[in-house]
Length: 563
Image (tube, rainbow, N blue to C red; front, side, top):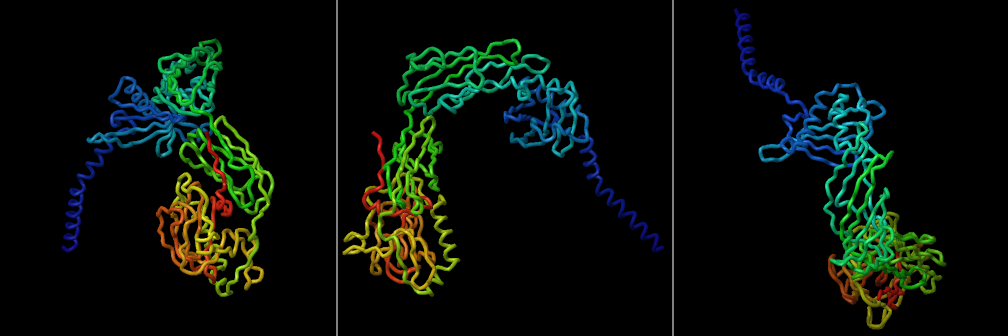
């Protein structure tokens, strides 16, 4: 009896579960009965195709006749394709056309549904596609032939690419009107279609000459140039000697070119280029001085520059530094640091911009300042606590960070003017002037650590404690902090990549972001860091290259000007 009751209970439970899941079974069955075909026009409202040249076309199933036909063609190609094991090795990994289907919700927002990678060939028997799961399919020959007759197969034919026009070197001018035909499928000429460019005004450096270049020279080409309503030139595009271009003139150009139909040629067409261009003067460059000492820096100035990133610089021999040009008013400037360790002699600088190239020779002379060698009298315990291997690594990393990272720089032209302050002079740092204890140079030895030395990258001035340290020049505070080697220190950016460093301070009196005028206090003298005596360490860097301040005390280097 008990056994019968158990069977009855199980039967009731089973029937209850069946009833419970009936809606689910119905839903699943309905889904599979009505499952939409991926990519079909019926369930997708938009289709985009992107060819290997990154040209993108968008089609709406409710759009123009061409859009509807293109959607229908791709739908037919997908439905009629035959599954294959894999793509042939000859095309696997090659160029493909990406077809992507989208749906729209009630709010009109589009959502990607699926995509297919089509591998087309001019041989209709060798056309395939892959779906998003990686399954491969072979297209029906008649479907492939239908696609090859559309303008979207243009990338498959060499003659289909229209000529490219460049002006004055590398400025590409898109056609405002283009009629181009190429030999396509079935040995028929097909039209090339591409949307017109909306670029109507260009600005580039052409100096006092202008030149045009076609990737495929036309048989016939004429050029008209207007200044307003005045016709300045009407003639051949490659004979512009009679065209007198004035600086800052905005001219209108109309160039008409023709490639006639001819036997054995896989293309023909006409193209018109209509655009305005601002004529700019040729770039000029100047070197501020033709000789400097090791450890100093020179200045290169340029004018008529619209794109700083296009300036190139080369030095023979190498100086181990790539100058950075900064805009400053109508000109640009770059500081060229000559490291203290570079060999004396002549260095040839080549500066190029567009069609302009200029060479300069800078004579680097032997170091003639004093303060070349020195010693540092600090205790062994201080050396161990402030100049261990870890301390030196921390110091090097911090210097690199402050010199190279954008967060610690101002992207600016020159923020200073005139000579930098010389702390040796009376009344600048102290009433009677501050003598130099350690000069810029090298071979600074520790008196209490035999064999241990370092290259000194700044100038140390003796001074009593708690004296206000003035900024040597105007600029902006970009760093305030401490490290074991420098103690408490402040860094000021003076623009053009030039920074001044003030170390061994008792306490900074500025904060990051402060704008500083020459003579403003940046901190108080002290003996923090690797020193036992009250002093202030002052350094200068261009990029990561330490440079001497001595020339700046005499209002050097020279900043060239242009009339």
